[in-house]
Amino acid sequence: MLTEHCGHARFVWNLAVEQHAHWRSGLRSAPGFAEQGRQLTEARAEFGWLAAGSVVVQQQALRDFAQAMANFFAGTHRRPTWRVRGRGEGFRIVAVKLGDVRRLSRHVGEVRIPKVGWVRFRRSRAVPEAVKSFRVTCDRAGRWHVAFAAIPEPIPGPGNGDVVGVDRGVRVSAALSTGQLLSAPGLRKTEAERRLRLQRRRAKARRGSNRRANLSAAIARLKAREFDRRKDWVEKTSTDLARRFDVIGVEDLKIVAMTRSARGTLAEPGRNVAQKRGLNRGILASGWGRLVARLEHKAPGRVVKVSPRYTSQTCNTCSHTAAESRESQAFFRCVACGHAANADVNAARNIADSAAGRAVAARGGSGLPEPANREPQLLLLPG
Image 1 (tube, rainbow, N blue to C red):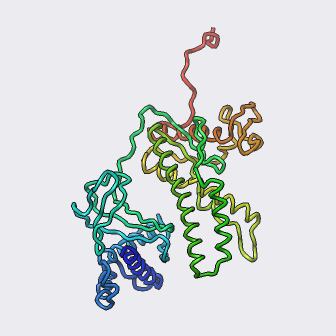
Image 2 (spheres, rainbow, N blue to C red):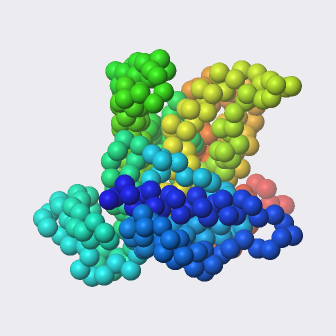
Image 3 (cartoon, rainbow, N blue to C red):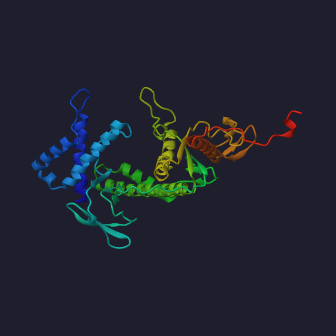
């Protein structure tokens, strides 16, 4: 029944996508949520297999699509696309009553789902009492999840005015201005080798066969394990930074543009495509975007984005900028003053200094360095 709910939600969503795909500028506006709701009522009266499903699931699919289109026209999200079976499966339930979610034991709870009944789940955390909706999803590894909609309170800062800079990289996922080097975990060597073997075997399997399906499921389980480890690292790292520092400086990176493919076109083929592909995978595996997004959720108003220009080529001691100072990926030696340090830590300290200046400007200061006040020197006074 959960799979049928996902199929109904996917079917209704794709119908809405198809309706809006026919709309062109200058024509009558595409049907909105109210009109599509009336059409759904007519469809349920005509098709028994659709009426056998939950009307709540199908209506919420339309409401989710309406919200997705509103986000698209607002310029914050991409245009909604087709949903494919086996990818991003899920549905949403609203108007949750007080007795629809209950706790059975310390680690087990159950939730009432329309047309299904009571379904048990593992309580990874406490469920808020005032929850009004939840979403049931199924990932590529075949695991079912339930997420209750609740906005957690922001993490309060320590209040000591400490500033930290975070330099994101591929070899080192996050280098802090304090000198810490953090790396997002991935698959172990044996797991990566097994995934490669499975991918090679799947490439030789016949499409549509049971063998290919079993290989795809095994690969999906390994990828889910890698994603879970990276997500866990992001959550723990972002929580730690939000608790330890009042201001968190990060580079304002355009990750979508940085990870764009370099294949080019038939007329103008790209260069170093394989190297660029490896770099893109390294960037995505380091969790750059998710780390900053979670920092903004947990420490709103305390994350400062600075320009990434010359942060890796500027000496944090004398402020001299030169590309020759970056001797290697991991070592920095200033050609002007001779200051030597880890290249990522040096860049993180430059980010922290820029973030501190931005924070001062936001509180009403100029944000620019000014001469420090000092006592008058007797030797410099006129005689």
